[in-house]
Image 1 (cartoon, rainbow, N blue to C red):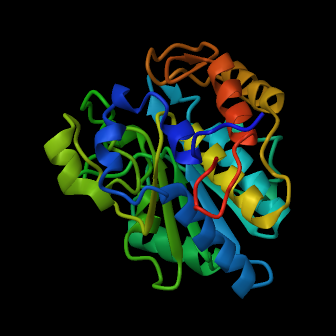
Image 2: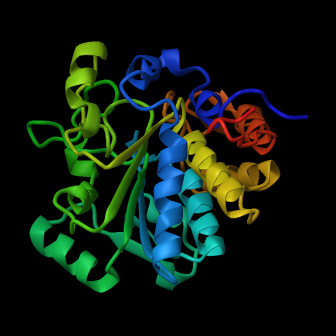
Length: 292
C-alpha cells in the first residue's frame, strides 16, 4: 500500500518536539528530494565520486544511538550506487563501526585535534571528496564551543570534525542532516534558529540541509529518494537497522534523550525506527515532485 505522505513529511514526523516544524518553512518543501537530486548529479558527472560521511555525537560519556546508524546505511547505499564512500568519526564513536565497515573505509580521529587547518588539509588531500555529508554531528557555535541540546559545553569531548565543512573546495557538495539546531549544517538557518528555538545554533553551514525529527530518519529519507531516482534498491531492511542499533548499544551507545544505555533512539522505541523505514518504502515519487 502506498503512503500518501512525502518523504519530507515522514522524516519530520513529530517535528514539533524540537521545533523542526518551525524551521521547515525556511527551506524548500522538497528539501530532501533536492539533496538527493544534487547527489545523483554527481554520479552522472563522475564514474565513482568520493564521499565522506561524518557522524558521532557525545552524550553522557558515550556515542549516541542517533547518527551512526543513519550514517552507516547511507554509506552502504552510496557504495551500492557507485560512490567511493568513507566514514569519518572520532574515537568515542569509532567502536560502533569497527568490524562492520572495512578498515580502509573508516577514518578515526582523536577527541582532541590541536591543528585544525593541518587536519582539514590532510583529510581533503588524501580523499579528494566530491561530497561531504554530516549525519547528527555537533557543529560549533558562534563562540567556538560545541554544545548539546541542554546548552552544556561538550567541547572537550568533541573533535572538531566540522572543520571539514568550513571553507571546503568550491566544487565539493556539502550536506547536513540534523534534528535539533546544533548540528553541522544548521548554520544555514542560524538566524532563524536563534529566533525560533531556545538552543545555541551551530554556525556551520552546508549547501543542502535535511531536517528530521531523528537524524537517522533524515538519512533513511535521503536513501529512499536516491533509490527512487536511481532505480537501484538501497533502503535498508528494518530488521537490519534494529540489529545494527542493538549492536551499537552492546558496544556502549546511549539514547540521546535519557543518556542511558538502552534500546532507544532519541527517546523512541525501535518499533518507531522500523515504522519510519516501512513508510518510506511505500512512498513513491510522482511527476509532481512529491510522494503520493
